[in-house]
Length: 529
Image (cartoon, rainbow, N blue to C red; front, side, top):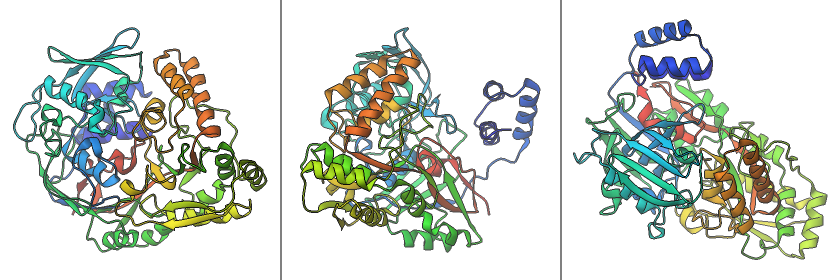
């Protein structure tokens, strides 16, 4: 039994898959009908997940500037908060990344993938008792496609020309074909709200397994069980408390002492220490997340590509992976895609640490004086140490890096996407198109390197509408090369998501989609005494 069929079996145990659904997926994964049927029977007989209890999570990422508006979710803290109370139209399979139904129970594209029809689930209630309608869905998507909303999903939805209702169905008409359209709707900003959140985007009323009962930005969020939840395979605990803990030492102490059940962003350097605690379990998941040093291509001195190349060649990636990630990750190559993505561009030469090439491009750039790099521990685990390590590797190329440590509170509003050179992270996206559309498309709000290239945008649009996979793969390769050699991102490493829990926590789902079980940790786990 492989990891995927183990996951399917756990879904059966949790009451989330019917026999027909299980057999179909298991046989598609390579099991015979007899083996699949036996596995279903055994899984169905297994003990049900425990229900009840109060789950406490200590999470890095909260800030006083956090907004309850899903369009403006920025941090891991709000990512998890939103998953507790809200649902998207589509979700992604934890092991394969494929699109799976949520509030949209099915979908059908036109032959050219320009028009998509989504059948919206009936009988689902919002937390205020109002039944979900097609109008709520249409209003939600229209709000997120409005530039005034400042939605983090704006770049993802940029190709939508028309959003309309057709009976109980949602019909999306695109400016060009897009075979990935269902996966784009998994973006965590696209929480379906009553009337799209137009009346009150901060209300936190959704269709999710929990109702928000209190919220202090950057400090705490509490939830109670939604007794009208339309799903049975989630929401096992009675209540949830998410506590903002930006200090890594405080998170470890809280978990070790049992004050919280789960923490995120475990620094790999502390893994061995945590393993000594008898009641702690390390939860490490490989995925698409990556740690980055971002330069604004439109601001001096980073508007000079020779300087950008100098800073890229001055990065010792292997040392970063070993010393910062403790081996919990893989080297990056200055573009945001790894082999977990479909149509990964193979054969691109790995950029290696080369002080001589760095010195050559640095001299050619004509720059002199120090380069200011801003960082903070909230940027990613070990970010300050990574900045200092980078400072040392740059010295060998004759490049002086000034490291400025910024406070964690406000980093995501005052430094990231504002200052011209800083450290940051990305959790990855379901598709290459979505990753590039969110962070590299010229018009994207979250284009944090200010990489604005009409020729890149053209390639992205071509790839989006190309249904021939071989041609599409070539377009993605050209895009990767452009970002790698001319963009403003230094991507030294793809990180494993390293989190930890007490052994009381059961049912954790390792999800390649994003950190913290793709943000669903609080809704997927249960507690055992």
